[in-house]
Length: 167
Image (cartoon, rainbow, N blue to C red; front, top):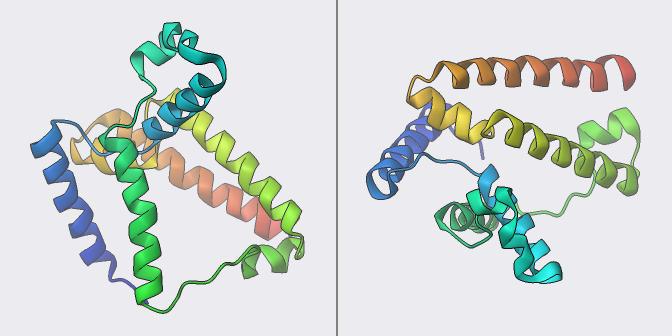
């Protein structure tokens, strides 16, 4: 099913209003991953994790952002099932056309990309949703710069992977 981008954009904007209204905080997802890493580390190392300066700032706990990420996954699953479009695809067709059908290669690329994205989001003080939705909504110059860099980097990466290296 193709979603009208204007309707999806308006929906995200309304969700942002409710986030500010109910929590006095902007929408964002990357902090939930930082909290999850802290919870995993806490399960292995115990409460010593709580003494780290990073985890004093981003306490490893389930909070509303963590529940938002969980809700996104569950909502996407429900929508895909209801629309009859749910399918497990290990190697997307575009990736397969450029690099072959290796599931291991696809998982490795996805893992490396996810790690780099997470590191970038932590360095930038926010992820694509934090800067792209919440930051630009507040007219933050840093978020506009970040969004421009996201798009330029994405275009260049896609060109390099699929336009030069992949062909």
